[in-house]
Every structure is written in C-alpha cells, then in structure tokens.
Length: 388
Image (cartoon, rainbow, N blue to C red; front, side):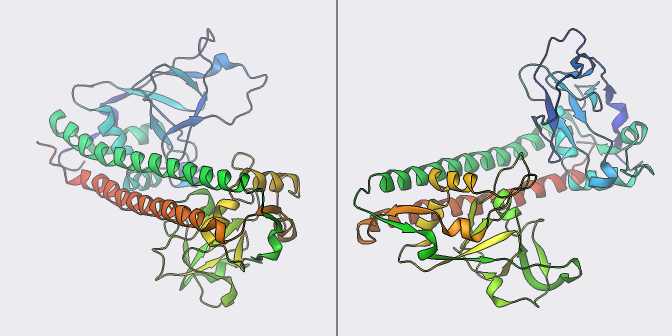
C-alpha cells in the first residue's frame, strides 16, 4: 500500500435493502459519466419488490461491464428522497463519515485514473466484471476532513460555474429560436421557398478504421450533434489526410445528422454549427452527417435556426425512412418549404441571431476551459498530503 493511502473497504459497506413493500416507484439507472438518470429499462410485468432502495448520501455502482467499457458507472445519490435501482447494482455507504466525506469520495471515483485502476483488476469474464473484494482493495488518499472539504469546495466552485454556463447557453438557444420563430411567423409577405433552391446537401466521407489516427485531419461524426461541447474532445479522432476536399468543413458551416442515433436520442435531421474557434484544425465530416452548402443571401445563423424550427423538425419526422434506425434523405431535406421574408427586411433578424449564437459559442468555450480545470483538480488529488 502506498504511504498515506488507505483501502476503500475500510470506509464502506454494502447495503442490501429491497423494495419489498413497493414503497418506492421512482426508478433510476447509472450513466457511464457517473450520475443517476431515468431508467430506460422496460419494467412491464417486472417484480419491483426485487429492486434495491438507495437513500440520500449512499452510492450505487455497476461492476459488471468495467472491462468492456473501461469505466465503472458509479454515482452518489444527492436526491432528497429514496428511490430504487436495478437489483444488479451494488449499493454501499460510508461507515466512517467523520473520516471520509461522501463528496470527496465521489470526486475520487470521477478520476480517469480511478477507472483505469479499476479496469486493471477486472476478472476474465467477457465483459470484465470487477469483483467486490477487488473494488474494496482499491486505495485512495484520506487527508483530514478539513482538507477534504477544502478540496470539495474548490472543485464544486468550478462544477457550479460549468452548470451556470450550461444554463445560460440553454437559455440563449431558446431565445434565438424564439426570435427566429416570431420573425418568420409574422412575415406575411414572404415568398414560399423550397430549401433545395437556396442550399445544397452533400454527404459525408465513408471512412475505414485503417485510416484512423494516421493524419492531421479531425473526423466529425454524430458526437458534434449529440454533445455540443465535444467537437475536438475524445469523440473526435485524427484521420488520414487522403480524403476528398469536398468533405471538409469550416467554422460556422452547418452539419446535419443523417440518422437517428437511438430511440432515446432522436437527433435525426438536427443541426450543429462548427465553432468559430476551430479555424486552425482541418475538419472533415463522416458519412453519418450531411454538410449544408449555403447558396442564398441569408447567413448561416438564420439557416441554423431554420433547421431547429418546429416546422422543419415536423417535416423531418414525417419524412423519416426506416424502422429500427430512422434516416433522412437529401431529397427530403431539400423538399422542405417555408415562407421567407425579403433579405432586406431580415437584416435585423440576422444581426440579432449572430449576436446570440456567437455568445453561445463564447459560453461553450468557457465550459471547455472549465472542464480542463475540473479535470486538473481531480488529477491533483493524488498530491494532497494525507497527513494534513
């Protein structure tokens, strides 16, 4: 054991309280990013008395797929009331709350190094389960409660700033759409225009795994639609430079999801705009994205909001092809019609949307910087003197 470190098992114990009286019905699962979320499991006809109860301040984890996912889904309940989770999950609590703070422990669980260490101790099962004894033998530094709370306070100040920026970004997105909807709905003198007459839809690049991690280009896939702040994070990979130039995108270009990623994430036809700060990277789009070529006098700021409008999304819904994984064709996109006002009368709209969307990009950039700080604080936990 490393000097100053202690075994996790010295501070936790399993809790196995089942929902025998069917007192609780709120069912949550654990996201791989380590937070509780509404369960997507089909529980029709399921005996909910078998499900485990988790109370505020307790932890739950899924040790079954650590080897496969290279991460251990684990979360701390910050809910006001108890709820239930799958009987396959472990519930545990801290036995020495005067020596180990729950928020400090959750910080330790959030470290990438913790996941790598847990992966190292997985068993030979095809999914790589982590035995409970191995989990309890994992080590962590346990400084004084005063130091733990100091570390947690510094970390939470950054996390709360991230949440605030996310809330501001969400409000700005709603404001931009409201401005667009109000202007277009009031444009009685506009001209009905087919999208295909003012834009061109181009398909993305069909890649092969052998081309990955060989060049200086970044491959943009569905991640830039699903996770707006992750354009060049772990979802984006360096790619071979041997690709047609027509698949390259630039800052403020619009890309559209060609298919529905899953039934629980209906992002089919949804747009994303390339951030303006990505002006030094060479970006290409994968085949699961369409690139929008703007041939009109309208700015991409307006077209971006058009692709987020209720009328457009309803058109996508009615023209989706396929049953299991929905897809949208280029023709279906280009066949969408909407009444456009004159460009001259829309100058104020373009100016307002540009200001709002650029502010959203600023907030997203701040979020990315704060995430780096957050990860740095997590990595510094190993440098905390356990004797203080």
